[in-house]
Image (cartoon, rainbow, N blue to C red; front, side, top):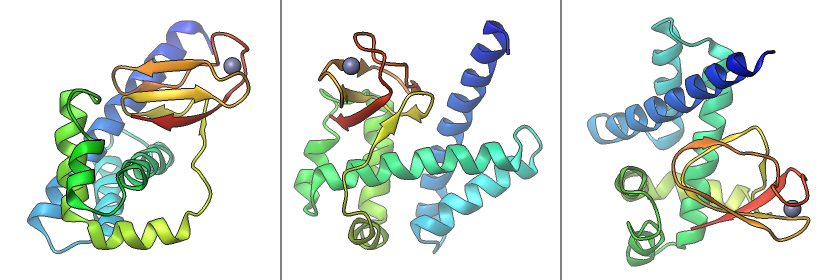
Length: 166
Ligand SMILES: [Zn+2]
């Protein structure tokens, strides 16, 4: 793949990420769907519309789900700590409000997910993630993600596995 093709794919994935998360939030508020159902429906709608393939929607939905899960795990279970974890000073404003609304509308599903995810979530080079701080598991180098984007290799040691914080 050429460099411009890769750039185009990345932009498509980021745009799909943003569409999925915003549609999921609407579905949570406007329907009786739980978070898993809302995420699935958002992905289905977007791939049926024809701009994205089903594979793309499934891949990017998994990234969205992980970020929601990670935000929730970082926040703990109290509503105040949810607000704190998505504090606009620490997270870009757009992501802050949408995560905050999803968390407050889906606490039940999230508690269920949290039980299933006992180990710490890993983030890898090439995946899409929301704003936050990524710390290289190999050398401890930190990368600030200021907007939703594809995760680069570690600028210092070129390893590809990170943990995330806000
Ligand atoms: Zn590193």
